[in-house]
Length: 234
Image 1 (cartoon, rainbow, N blue to C red):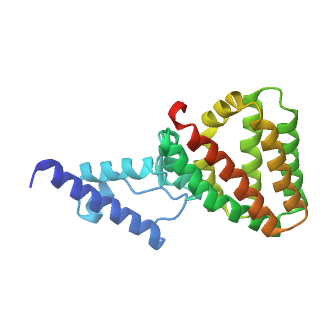
Image 2: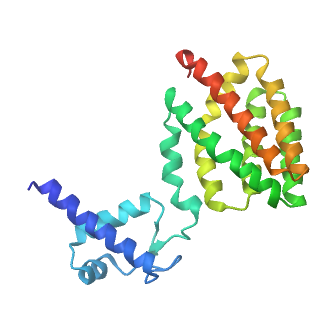
Image 3: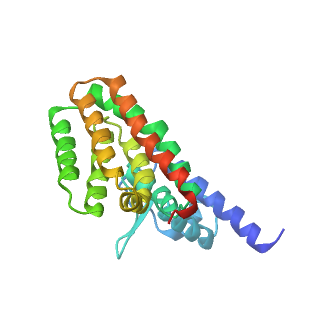
């Protein structure tokens, strides 16, 4: 067995044992970890493998290093844990963007349906404010920024932080493609205005199935357009 493989195996053991301590509640959100030396000794591992494990879990959003204060368990909120996922999706291009839109087409209609049933008046007001911002936007980038905020608010109204974090990770990487589409297709923005109004209308009416259908049509239309234009996609 080669040295790199041995090191990887030992580091993975260290990662697994730290994760177990967190999962069992021995290490709680916001708690400071013991020193690297004490952790390594307690788990019967080398300090170098423990250091690599801490780095890996910090990258994944499970741990955070505070300058001069040590290493802490994060809040373990979905947004922290899915941050790396968001980074990976930002690297998507071409057909990978279509793959992301396919996932959105599965998740967002369900989120919209849930939001229609659960939304509060405050949720609806926030969604309407983003709809108004889209309709008043003078530039494509301004429209797309409001578009992202609209979808973010709809999913947030479903009341599931984990779902919000996943959809956020899927939506943000398509910003460039949305701007590109808005500039290439003169009819895209008027059509999207109508599609967003239908989603909003279903939410206002507290009609889950109408919200599901409207969101599915909207994302499916975007997916179809992008698929048809992959040969010139940015």
